[in-house]
Length: 138
Image (cartoon, rainbow, N blue to C red):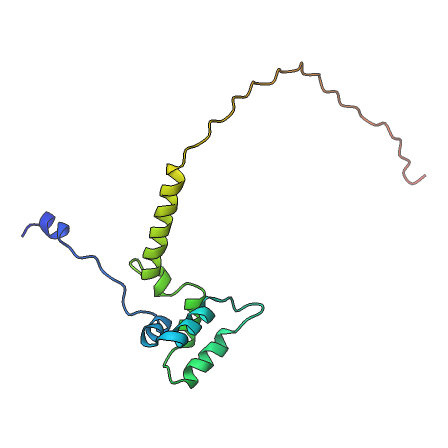
């Protein structure tokens, strides 16, 4: 097998393990999943549930999750959002592509032609100096 053939048939790499929050979301169903998803999508500052509160609740419920996983997921910096082939990124890319297609497919209105304004004769600018007398120390 030659170099070109190997490069053509290469499989793309995928990101590693899913983030801790996504692992929990994949384990739970129904009302619990929806509640966790909603709380993770909410902003924590200035009013709302803090990352520490979510972390404490998940630990109390028996889930093994790091605080950093919650913080990164809520700030959209985890593998769900940053990974090259992440589900969220693919969904965002598809939405963006659809928006771009929608924008480019809509007919554009012709811009009204404007007549250039007639130039007025430039007046020479004159500088005037104020002649104020100052008295120093007299």
